[in-house]
Length: 193
View 1 (cartoon, rainbow, N blue to C red):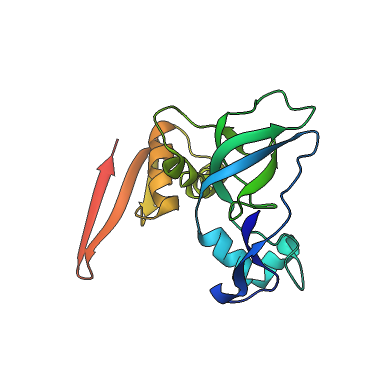
View 2 (cartoon, rainbow, N blue to C red):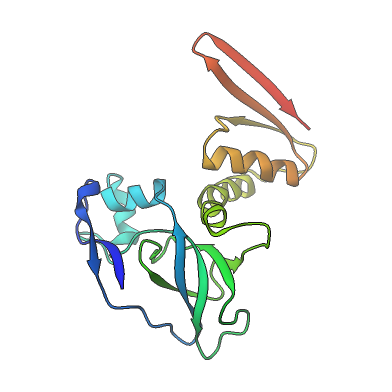
């Protein structure tokens, strides 16, 4: 299969399109034919390893997992013998920041990891782009122990994490206050109930 592979840390040029073996799912895993993926902050951070601490997860001297792409969507092509939640042909999307793999034609992921069927009203591109920002937003909301009715300030709600945070906070019943910069000298506050 074709995949974008990086074998050392560095700038985008360290990633190369190569032919690699197609992964084989373990008993508890899905083999997903990837239809869409993204290049996001997690992928860029893992590739560059500018934040040295990330190497404790990705590999101290060189990457353990050579194919980036933590967000993905596609179709289940094969399932392991113990998989019960999914079947061949299911349209799925997910987030995998442990082993990644979305920048390849195929990836494997455990059925108990962050993978779920794509809702009927979403296409592959839309589904693939949903998870990374929402993942980080949800982690932060849970860490802050936000409760219904609480006022929450979202500073910079234009990116993946901020825009997901606004939607999740509204879902959880919080009152969202946004800071939006129109120009450097003009600050606008908006409140959403």
